[in-house]
Amino acid sequence: MRLLERVAALQSFVETGEGADLLTAYKRAANILKKEKWEGTGASRGADLEAQEKALVDVLDKAEPKAAAAIEKEDFTGAMAALATLRGPIDAFFDHVTVNDPDAAKRERRLNLLARFRDAVNRVADFSKIES
Image (cartoon, rainbow, N blue to C red; front, side, top):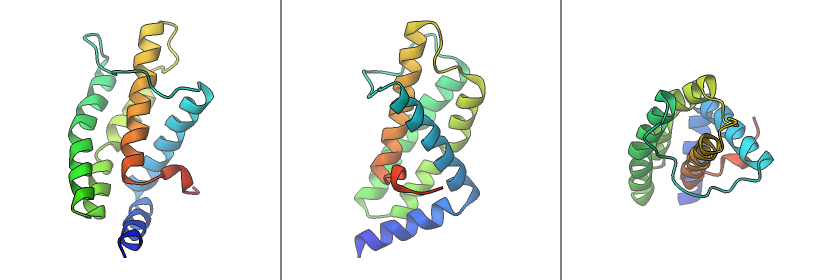
């Protein structure tokens, strides 16, 4: 029954505008990471974060534990709601930040941030299996 509840919550979520947009952002992040063969090598923090990077880090810091707690309680709708908070910051990140910056430190930090986003989503549901 737990699997069916998780699938139902996921299906309901991706049928919303927020869910569809988050799925699009997830696929974009996953494609960039796949193209770069990037698995993540460390932190996505730093004193010189741009506003959109900081906003994404901040929301991940809040959403990851909320989603984990919801999954622990088998509250899959709550886990999806925690993911929904990522939508605005990930959209702003893609709109204002160049991931493949010529500065190697920025590029690494940004790829790590995308890996963190991808991994946070995957802990709730494997979005890579969803057809858009």
